[in-house]
Length: 144
Image (tube, rainbow, N blue to C red; front, side, top):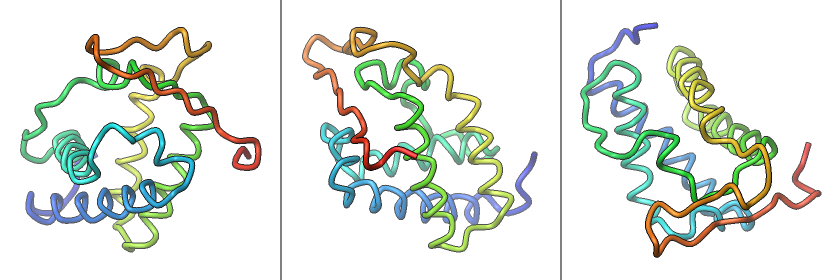
């Protein structure tokens, strides 16, 4: 699927979505704990560059691939779904074009299996010796 807009328009939409999404994340009392080791501006910029590149825009993303970017964070299906719900809320808040929303979710789901943990926290490993293993199981009241 090719997005029919200029690179600048694509970048602006993706940034607006990512910025709104991470505002929701960092205001969420529980979910922000998972992102405690990265500044909001940094992750917003990384996510924007990653998505723009994967949507066919300029190749500015210089981070790790999805599998190697998150090995220190325990993420299960419930956490994945919670994240997706916040993302959809961000789409709605900024009135994002349907084609961007659909492609974003398609890209996310392409990486899902390499990010989700199938077992316990023992699966997590630091990228560096100094990495904290982030284990924040979802409270029952947030599960669907």
